[in-house]
Image 1 (cartoon, one colour):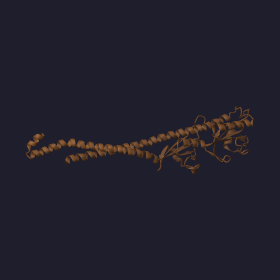
Image 2: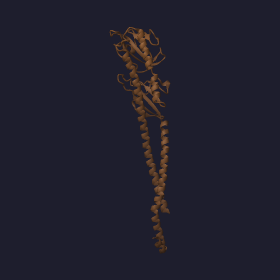
Image 3: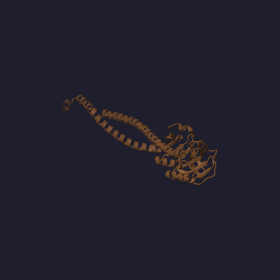
Length: 318
């Protein structure tokens, strides 16, 4: 009986130890795979969102190229009414523009689709000086417009006459709400910040008070890191066709609670399966210990019977 019990305890201990070690190893691999899978999914979502934002900006950039073409039949004409009608058409077609403005070659606003800010001057502004020299300009970060009373991203380009001389600048004020729509579509429960090349937060879907404040720039150099509450992933915007990238960085914070909630659910399933395996191994250990110990116990009992002179019992058992 003692031998059988000893074998049972030994097999049970070995079984439990192996199960615990194997379970810990498997669970560690599972956690690492879960984190890696999360990173892959988030990076894919970041890239998709940045591509959508870049495409949105490319469309605005391309609109400016079309409107400032030196051979455009309407924009090169002297008919102000037709120009205004065309610009209104662009506003209504894309729903992305807050307003269009035209400045003369002295930097004075002479036309606006909302009829606001007329006669304001912009001769010292970069958007005007770039356009008046024949270039296409766009803001790297949103700019607050006192005329529109909100933040906008401006695109500008030259206005030509029919002799292909630059006579002024066309400015398109675009809404940044489109970025909000893109983010809300792709990230419904995740904290998102978009950060300019200079480390300024230009968009946040969770902390409006942080807008246009400086962030810790070194964190933008890492693709993935973690703090006490979040896994944090970043990636940088790329150019799209003719649109040169503003090199914005999207920073995505994924709650560890959400990750660990999923992990806990998996851990419960793993624990149930492991418990079933342990119970099965215990039953197997009991059965195996009996198989191993029965012949030994029979032999032991036979020796005792012989020692006691009971040869008949041995013969019957043998």
